[in-house]
Length: 201
Ligand SMILES: [Zn+2]
Image (cartoon, rainbow, N blue to C red; front, side, top):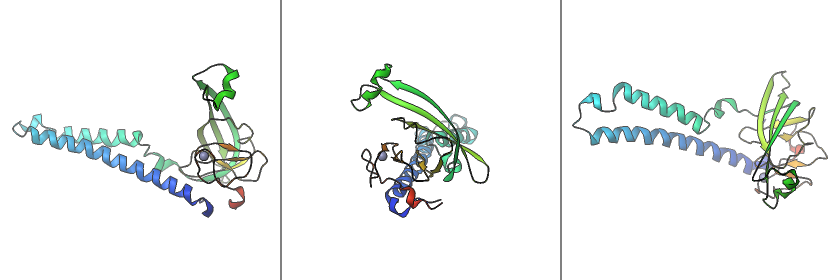
């Protein structure tokens, strides 16, 4: 399952994120390795057991590699895959920041309240396997992600999109903004919207 030709900018978005994460990871390891090297050269007169050598160096590098793996979400390269399937279960929980007054939810636009709808979808793949996908909806498009709907998740994009035409609207796969009407681009982040017509399933 690949992103449609029309959404080339989204492919670049995913690629850029991948490159950025790997670069930061490599940089992270390099900085720590160089720090150890620099410590050793600045303390060249120290006996070997006071330098960062042997098991100390191995431990430092292992800690760097492991912490960076989580810090830069390198694990996603191993677990995140594109897939399509049917939503079997949705669980939602919400939180607000800035204001707890529900009457202010409407104030998202004016910035009075920041509404977060934490969403977990359990998706059944055609093979019968189940996948879970988590993301945060900012606007709460309740009817877009509904049990029984076919959705497509693209690797590297946080918001899955509906695989079939629907009357609820179009979601931006990059930022999650809902669009009632069909549009070429998202009016929040300006990435192209995925048109279900392009998803030949
Ligand atoms: Zn967007």
